Image 1: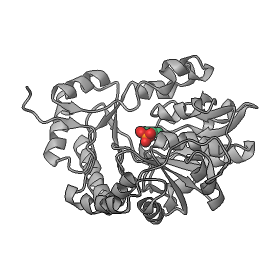
Image 2: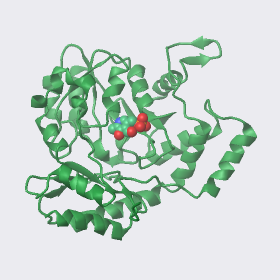
Image 3: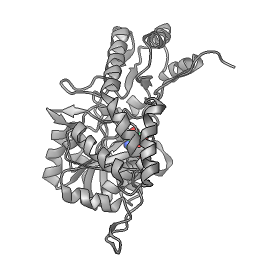
Image 4: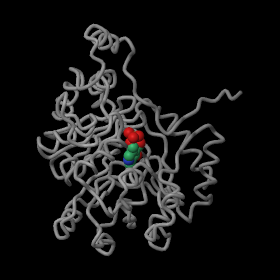
Length: 371
Ligand SMILES: Cc1ncc(COP(=O)(O)O)c(C=O)c1O
């Protein structure tokens, strides 16, 4: 058995267990376990205040929130999206019987390249689903201009973008809807969880009905909704997590800065920048292992694993390479040269509150040994 401590790409931040017990006691006392109980309501209110948004609907996970966001806006036909994301982005389209149309990414932001959207629009296109990959903001103004010109809706997969601000306000206020994930691996987690940010109360009301089977009242069902409600346990945990979020974000920032300092000048390793002026959440630390690095990305990934460091190749393979997408014309690698290139070179290094400076130094040492 190995004596070396494993370092994973992330480790969920957890408050002391005893701090959670009073919340559990309240749930046991009230016997309200789900269906929009008091903790659910409090978490919605506190998240609105923290994120600087007006309307939020909590979900049991981000994937069901994506599926429901598409239902809420009655999206059909084709949706333009990015192949460079977690599979849930495109899966949410298939679950709605919608055809994903993949467009390539920008080589610097690694987000959907707005310059490629227009060429992908057909009479069947109804929406654009971009991803703020790693929490780095998409070119929201350019995307909105195209959406306005062609009368398309925009649903942002903002699973990585908790607390990211852009142009003086929340990044989540762009587009028609934004979808968050509160999965255990995310900056803010409720074990499992997610949310949709709506621009108005009417849209939130439709979403709240859709996540509860379509119920309006005891005897009225207005849509074939799903069960995607967040439970009281998850909501209570979210309230506790929110108390520590600023400290967690500050620690992530310090880790990000230390990596950048340690990696400065290392031949063949490029850190992915966030857009200038944007306030990031440091949810990931992506590097590109370029052609002048002596090892391939996969050889470096293996070398790190041998030292019990579990970096991850987010995002490789591209969504468009999975069997259920491969047959779509836009999934062809010739249509996605930048995403294909990046997917072969990307590596996300461990980043989480509690990652020690000496652990970071050890990781960077292994990278340097490759040189
Ligand atoms: C970009 C992206 N979209 C969607 C999801 C799905 O969220 P969840 O795991 O909460 O269902 C994730 C991550 O898990 C993700 O990274």
